Amino acid sequence: MKSVLNGKTVVLGITGGIAAYKTPELVRLLKKAGANVQVLLTDSAKQFVTPTALGTVSENPVLTDIFPKDVQGSWTVHIHLARKASVFLVAPATANTIAKLAHGLADNILTNIYLALPPTVPVIIAPAMDTDMFVHPATQANLEILRQRGHIILPPESGLLASGLTGIGRLPELTAIVDKVNEVVAGAKGDLSGKTILISAGPTREAIDPVRYISNYSSGKMGFALASAAQKRGATVQLISGPVHLSPPVGVDLISVESALDMQTEIENRFIKADVVIMAAAVADYRVKSVSDTKIKKESSAGFELELVKNPDILQTLGKKKKKQILIGFALETDNEIEHARQKLVSKNLDAIVLNKANEPGAGFEVDTNIIRILPATGGIIEFPKALKTELADRILDFCLTLSEKNHV
Ligand code: C5P
Image 1 (cartoon, helix red, strand yellow):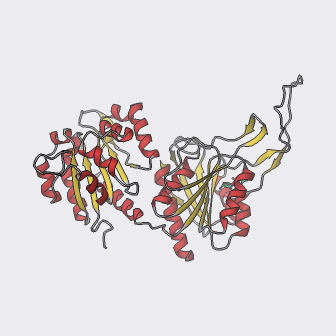
Image 2 (image 1 turned 90 degrees about the horizontal axis):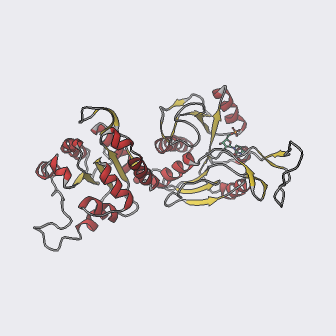
Image 3 (image 1 turned 30 degrees about the vertical axis):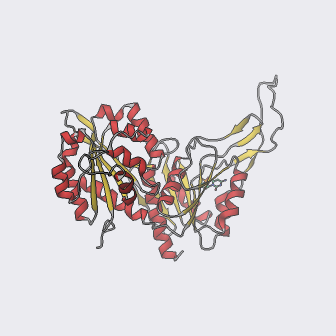
């Protein structure tokens, strides 16, 4: 099979963690997959692995300085190399380098090249360090900044660490890193290019009066992850989102809405041109019948009744109108989940429904991970282990791609 890495340049930044001793083998595996590997080494990485070893296996000069002593006029090397990169991989990534990348410091060759990368170059970061450093709120906050920037964070594994302690922090298997590089480069090639994908995300807010509303706990993370992943894979993405606290994904057309009715208008306006529609939003089922123009005053009576009316089911309306579009819904169930999800799949005329586990740690609203199953209209259940929403977004898109190939959309 022809490797997607053939002729691609992997810029590999190695930082000063003990796992750096494994990197000549990582370079060898990337080369074996057809990549041209250009290694960058920080000063502390040199304590664990030598430029000679890495230069030998990569068959390229290893860059260690912003101002190489022996080459005249080469201080712009970082700009040229950054432009040649098909992917930028940092493995192992120490807490120190992660902090620098998150905050834009440029004090060595690795951080310089990172800042010079064109925005289209995917970035993969493989943190490896002692458990306490990894779980420290500072490191986690920095990783979150990088994640929000659209970078891929390869979660470290648990096991015996160099310190003799056991815990999370080990560099993942080298083959897993190479697989991820392959996957990202395949995606960067744009397996969704030419497709228009409409994604809804977040909660809706149903006004009660000028200062109050009814809503739910949806964070929008799943929908935003889908939008970002689809954009990276070359799709034209329109993201219709209720109020959330997330940064807009780079390159995505974000349309912010408040209520279910607003969301319906924005989605229906764009439906005809869409190839795929993924409704990840938690749309409020009801809205207040008559919204007060003025703040409702506290009455002396003990109770207060609010009359609600049903919101339109946006997805069901789309299901009725659909022609060539692939239509994917989400379901969050607390009981008889498969049965309920199947009913929705049929009644809304969907191509598939993604069933979120409710009531389980690491799944559902607000958290970064999720546990999902895909129920295709054609039958069966596709199960996935608990994973980051960013990871699952790619799996859901892989599934959409197989459907679109079958339907010739
Ligand atoms: O019926 P239920 O609300 O559980 O269905 C969930 C799916 O339907 C989700 O994909 C959600 O975005 C969509 N939905 C909708 N309009 C509503 C309610 C839910 O499009 N009013």
